[in-house]
Image 1: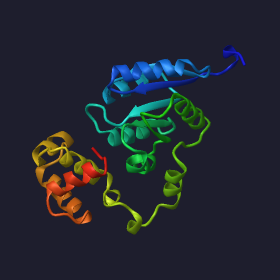
Image 2 (image 1 turned 120 degrees about the vertical axis):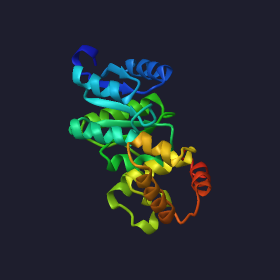
Image 3 (image 1 turned 180 degrees about the vertical axis):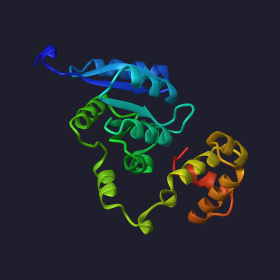
Length: 215
């Protein structure tokens, strides 16, 4: 099959590590139907880039500087509801995939996945499908009751975001500044997080995050 006869799937890679972007671009150039038309290292650049070139899929790292991965995903889906987004993450699929798929992502892959798997995910998403493990898709479809969920999965998206920031040692004041929320609001979130996760102090949250590979 000749390359010239194929319609290339145009993608943008959004990741703050230049070497990772370069490796990813090189791997995808080995295919005959996927074309990297742009690269971005942070959320603001990505939002501007999309206005200049129209991709068919975005490959999005959830840990870039600035706006959190979940907030950026929601903004992208709000401004470009039909644009498919494939999440690339260093975190295990079972920890984050369902939350991001529920927020509008079309797929979730860990960064250690083979290039062939990435290309397969891009093609499936380009065809209108979703890409994740069978276990994650089933969990998404059946939406297990709270009794079946790990404690952190019972948190709202905002609570989960605050939980993550507490887990890396940020103070309530620092979190408030970063999220443009009052310290009182952050304190309320913290209280709800502790209640939902049946814990009493930040040290327990940090220990939980470490043992669950959430950092």
